[in-house]
Structure formats: structure tokens, C-alpha cells
Amino acid sequence: MPPRPRGKSKPPPKPAGAARRSPAPPPKVRQDNGGPSRVIRERRPSPVGTTVARATPAPGKPTESRGKYVYCVIRSTEPLRFGHVGIGAEPAEVHTVNYQDIAAVVSDTPIEVLDATRENVLAHERVNEAVMHDHTVIPMSFGTVFKTRDDIVELLRGAYGAFQDVLVKMQDKVEFGLKVLWDRDAILREIEHDDDDVRRLKNEISGQKGSTYFARVQYGRLVDAALQARSEQYVVDIFERLRDVSVASRANKPIGDKMIMNAAFLVARDKETDFDAKVKAIGAKYQNLTFRYTGPWPPYNFVNIRLKLERAKPAE
Image: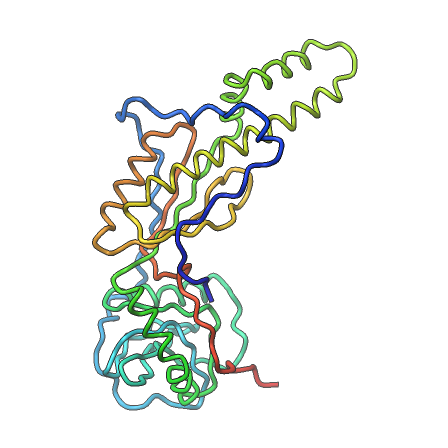
């Protein structure tokens, strides 16, 4: 399951070589706010059928002939159903299994290892997104399957205190994902313009007639250190600017050479508009950065409950 909520993540330390050099110049910002914002809000179209996911009393006990796929845990004293929006070639009916005042949101499924196909993962997320419209959710990891209804009741009973604690902490909070990308070549041109050592080595290499091997090695090290320092400056500043509109944040590992920041932010529902405005304001200031952010999502990155019951295993 996703990790526990934590406070602001600290950026990685600077490389040893960077500490001996003069501080890199501060990231350049646009002086006028009239330029186009480089912020892309990515939204997945609402899945067909999500509108039926308003809670209504569940009619009777679901069949026990199959396993139970668990999407999330919510607070509820009554059995609920959310329509046919679950995992499966024919979307399974999603309903609750209740214990006291909490409930697991589940659907019937074959007892087997589910492939993490795009269709299955989207179905898992679709259910959690539909349920979170009216409930605070504790999302379960993809592929959580139990053999019987009684096993799920035992899960809820055994981890009741942990579920209650997390439901209180996650009350009226949602997650936003933020990825920041840069144009590496454009940043490198800035560094060559701003950094005397880098510019001098580049000129030496271009004007030298003999071997340039050692000069190129030194140039490469200086450039790598300067890029790392510039990246860290951007990341630290973005986290700091979003501190007052978020409850917590988590830094995940960037993906690829263009991404310098891959973060998740826990945001109070009444701060969603403020968070959106702040991201757009940051994107309008920084040159050579592109902001891609998604949400609201269930708090996948801020929940971690260790299951104390063995999950279903596929039949041999």
C-alpha cells in the first residue's frame, strides 16, 4: 500500500563537487505575468456510469461463490451499493461489506491474480473516484482480493483502530499529483551564459587544436553539477510556494531526463481552488518549465495500513 503521511520531503543533498563552486544564480522568472502559463491540468474523462455511484441501500447479501475485490475503506453504518462500475469485462456491481461504522467497498471477482492492464487499473481508480464524491476513502492497492465476505469482516475488525485513525486524518482531504519538466538544452544555454567556468571551458574546447579529452571531462562534470544545483533550486522553491495551500507533500522519483519533480500533495477540499491558483501562478513565472498536474485523487501516497489477514491466493 502507499506510504504513510509525512511532512514536507527534503530534496536530495547536493553532489560533493557542487559544494566547492560558487552558488548558482537564482532561477530566472518572468518579470511580467502576462505571458502564457506553462501549466497543463490533466483530467481523465468521467467514466460512463459514474453517476449511478450515489449510495443506496444494498439489497440483501451478495453471493459468496467468488472472491471479493476490495477497492477502498470508508465510514458507513449502512450497507451501500454503487452500481455496476467495478472490475471485469462486464463491470461488476460494487457494494459494501460493513463492520460497525466502517465498510469495505468491494465487488465479486474470480480468485486469481489480476493483471495490471490499463482497463483493470482504470476500473480500480474509477470506483475510488466515484466513491470519494460522497465519502472519505482509504484506497487499497490494486489487486487486493479476499476469499470470502467473512475474511473482509475480519480485516475490518483486526485493523479497525488503524482504519478509524486514517479516516480521521484524511477527512475532507484529497491528493493532487504534480510533475515538473524542463527543457534541458535551454537550461544548459542559461548555465553557459551565467557560469564563468562553464563558459571558459566551452570556449577552450572549441578553440583547442589538440586533444580536448580532459577539458571535455571537466566540462561535463561542471555542467552536471550546475544542472543538479539548478534543478534542486527549482524543486525547493516550488515545494516552499505550495506549503501554505497543502497539508502534506511527498517527493517521488522523477521519471526520465526531462522531469525534475514528481510530487504528490495532500490538499484540504476547501483549499482546492487555492492550490490550483498557486500552481498556475508558479507556472506563469518560471521560464523553461512545464507543470503537469492531476487530481483530485484519493490519497494514494499518504495512506499506509498493513493488512493483518492473508489475502486470497489463486486456486491451483
